[in-house]
Image 1 (cartoon, helix red, strand yellow):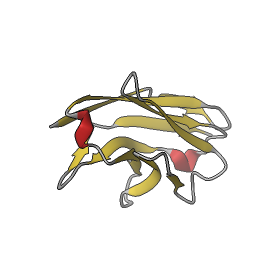
Image 2 (cartoon, helix red, strand yellow; image 1 turned 180 degrees about the vertical axis):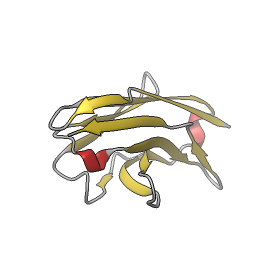
Image 3 (tube, one colour; image 1 turned 90 degrees about the horizontal axis):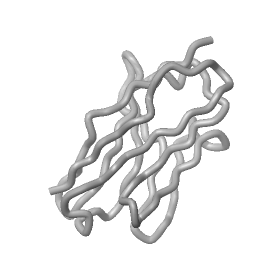
Image 4 (cartoon, helix red, strand yellow; image 1 turned 135 degrees about the vertical axis):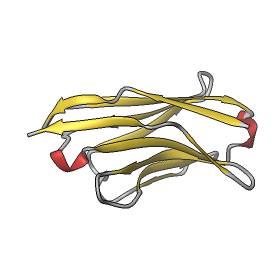
Length: 115
């Protein structure tokens, strides 16, 4: 049992920055990898970034060069720093973790980028 809680979403101007946070609780030892996915209106879920228990990081094409994923293990917190945001970054951002046989999801946080 893993619980994920996102925060940090909101309205931001194009070209600006913001940071999303995800606090994990429960059976943290079950997590093999954790990351961020997003869903824009009318589009499918898209991988933003992920990090494994060994520290290997993967970015989706839209995030490369602009977003940075990081974690604080002592605080059980995952971060996504978003820089140079664009209107097309507008989406619901989900924190998600993979366990042995299941995946866990947060409730999502809305990010809206104005032009």
